[in-house]
Image (cartoon, rainbow, N blue to C red; front, side):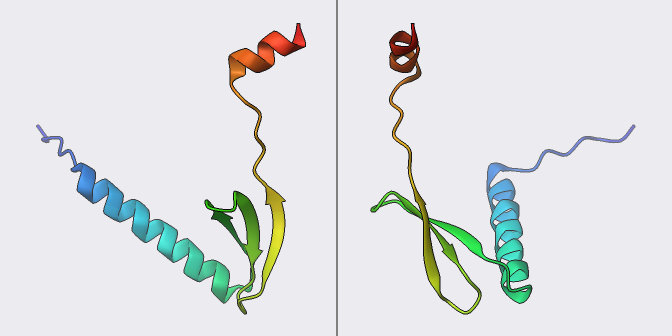
Length: 73
């Protein structure tokens, strides 16, 4: 019977980082914009392959689900 091999968490993280890095390189090569989130400013920017940055939107602050639910009723 074939033995099941489990990969470690470190391997999962390395593979995920590699996948993201490849996707970003692919988007740059195709001249597609990349969405970037600035945590400090709480804003979303679109960055083109030539380096130009355009502000897209701001983060929505909705509050807790229970507070929103209470306000509707």
